[in-house]
Image (cartoon, rainbow, N blue to C red; front, side, top):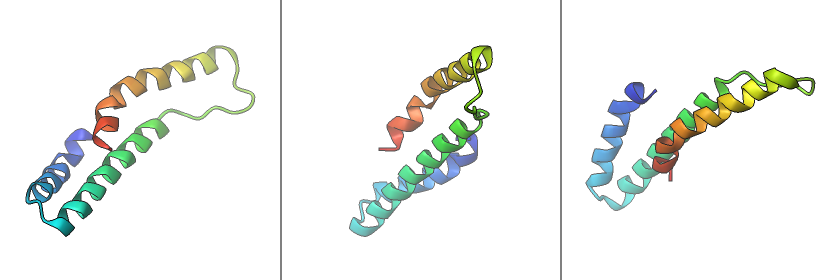
Length: 80
């Protein structure tokens, strides 16, 4: 997803760097929303569990989320 959004993020960064009072605010909000959407999409890529998910499938699910969160940290940092 980083590769797919690289051009959009660069365009928003240029808009932010221009320091226009209105455009900068809009660009910052759009940039943040883009990173949040990427985070949600990545988290949703892990199959959901149900009330009956127990044992190894539950442990695998939890491990997948724990592993993913570390990789999402750069995006989380940029979504603020």
